Length: 233
Image (cartoon, rainbow, N blue to C red):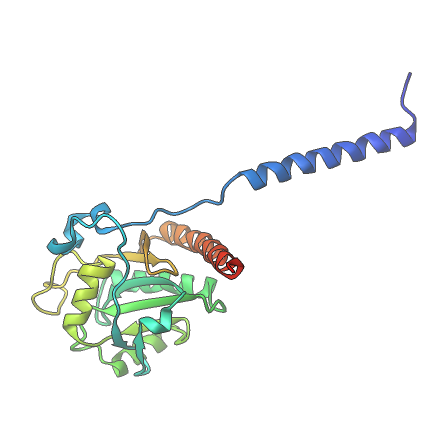
């Protein structure tokens, strides 16, 4: 015997509810994607200081004190709890730095209004890249001073950070030019706890797309950590 019209509607509603319930159950049982936590022993030894090659856990970015493009001192306190995208460059770089700047602008645009994100480009030629030089470079590359800092300072500190915190250069520089301080094209993703979470080719649009996606993962992770912290008695 055929179903009446009203019964078809009931069956249809039940099917919709059932389907939605199954989809919800699958969603809550599927964990959010998670990036690995990287340590020096996970990386190419060419970018790791010899003294740190065997470190396999608990690596976090070291404290720092540098000047940005407007002459303001920036320290680790300014990025506490923030997700960072870090790279090395210099203003007179004729090659990959231009491509990296273009991709960093894309990251800046994606998160321009999000105060949980900070872009940090460190100069590989700090003796030349003074704040006023960085300010001109910032103007030419549409750098927003709130979301993206161009950083300079003591060459030894920048070298130390490159070799023992970010692992963004191929060898320890004896001087400060493109021949002796060989920065990579990497964009380094650092989470809200100061841990390394990913490396991306800063000259590649596809890699930058992946970086932008991965930042959204870290934002969810950050929010989850803060919720757990707030729920503790």
